[in-house]
Image 1 (tube, rainbow, N blue to C red):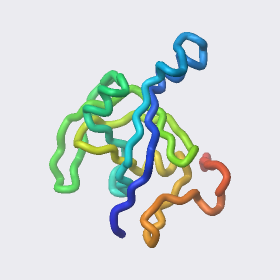
Image 2: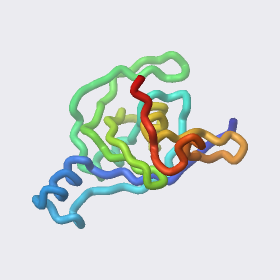
Image 3: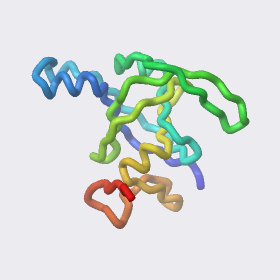
Length: 137
């Protein structure tokens, strides 16, 4: 398939909520832009510790992460972060590990994005090109 990367804007969801309520200036919302690796083998989103720190996210618990080689490790899980890819956004907790931002299956599903293996990029689901649609049945 080859490597697929995508620009992503990460936003501290708590900051964004406070700003919407007029309790925080919009220029104080903590954000981080990254060239994220799309990993269809990963279920969850992954943020490295330095990104979590820059966003000011708290660690709200631990989860067991299983690596491709079968190793398992307990890692931190963040408060919700807003993940925006091509103007489509969703809330997601992220696992804290590694050294780069990874986008996993849950984000792709919620944003209704597909991997174009030929062009090595993400594309909106052709059935819903204008906005994400979530199946509930």
